[in-house]
Image (tube, rainbow, N blue to C red; front, side):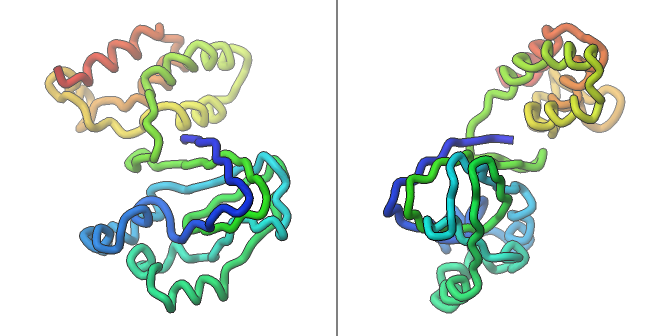
Length: 217
């Protein structure tokens, strides 16, 4: 999970739908990707926003087109006049109060007040987020706290939620010479290592050794 603070001033130009992943590309660039990737793109990252201020309807909150992520050609077709017209006809807006969260794939918005919110991306283990994240430092930062929480009675499910938001869940890419599979077809993922460190009170140094095994030089 990644988060980025977003501030939009009054009069800001609305963003055109759709959005991440392929929606950030030009039409020609998006057309280079095969059809099945267009279908999978909305599944790779769920986007969200947490409002820091009240956003009534008259302020021009984000416009949403329900079920638009199910339209296969959307990443190429959204620039066509007829699709733009359809979006304008069928888009919906919802009031947000400070603290409310909304989750979405394709969005656009016009802005009548200074809007402040956190934009979230909840990515699959095989997806790539917009922001660069130092997951090694993140794991080392939470492992001791999670070990304390475990001793305080936190459930394994609760610990795993923090693990999922922090560690990289896919075991590749790696250096297979230094990090070979031992008991299966893949080496452990970073999330596997963090979970083991928390549940078995392993020293944090094991996370450093894990990072060292995945270096390319």
